[in-house]
Figure 1 (cartoon, rainbow, N blue to C red):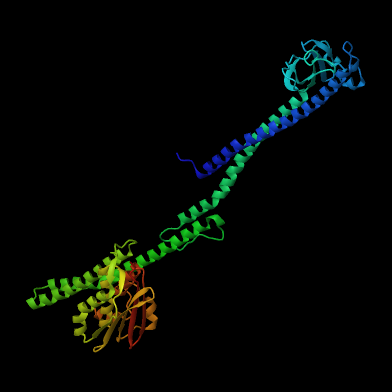
Figure 2 (cartoon, helix red, strand yellow; figure 1 turned 90 degrees about the vertical axis):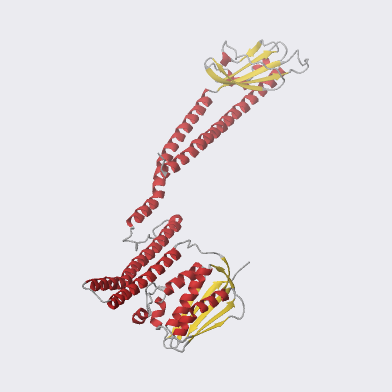
Length: 465
């Protein structure tokens, strides 16, 4: 079973402490030990130096130099300071009263340097200093003596043991407190995440209007909360569009379905003449064609709504696309006595899908012809503007009221529903145009005046080799 994030955080935190605290404790302990033994060694070195001076002053067969008042601290049997003087063969020449009849543990001195050692003597720890000395006027090897000074370090050892135990106890306490504190801090740190999770769970398809409160969210989690809010806003918009789309589509399909059903029912009630059957089938066919047109446009919109609509990306000569749309629509324009003019002084190249771009131009020019006056004109102009290739389609038609312009690209929206139905419009053409332009990373603008005409301008990115 995977560990929780809180457990992982606390485990890592504790692992770091488990490594660092013992290392820090060892450094502190050995630092104190070094200081304690350095102090002991300095004291023993000084005492050995004093004894060396006294030894160098005494005669060959007397120990008068070791009877001075400087050695008072060695005279008590209960003293924790000891010394003894040995010759080069290890024979004890002199010992302190604190040693009694015992001697210090033998410790070989193999060089002319002073040495230190920690030993056990009579069940107690001592620190031993061994210093070789040479009385004046004697040969170096024959007359060498060894002065040994020692100090009972039971108190120092007890101090170090107490310090070590205190450090170990402190480390254990710190680990325990840190573990509890780490769990508490991790819980508090992850509490906003749990709150965000609960808030996200509360948001459903029927409650997409809810948002996460950014001021109440910790600064580190605000980008996450903002991302959730943007996602929910997009979902709310998508669901709203879907509901509206379903409502509009069902409304649009209701009429042709009703026509088909009523014509079929009426026709089947009794026998009809061939002419009546032909008229009924004509009505049914017209309604079916209208439905087929809506279904085809809905399929196009569905493809364009996809994040990857499958557009072809190739070099397209825009003037040729507009010319092709003009050629396709010349019969329609001639039937409505509308003139088509094309002004394209130079070739324009864009990156896009030729089929979709042709559908874009056909839809726009069809609207310009359909909602025009008899004897009117439609002018198509292609020209470059900065980094854009633009196509402007102007007509001298009926125009669009200013109040309807903001909604003109909405699906199934008609500025004049009665006239749109007369022309067979479904209210999806301009929506498809907008989706095609946006799929090509462009933009579309429209301006219109009632009774004077409408101008649509398309901006597409120019081709870059």
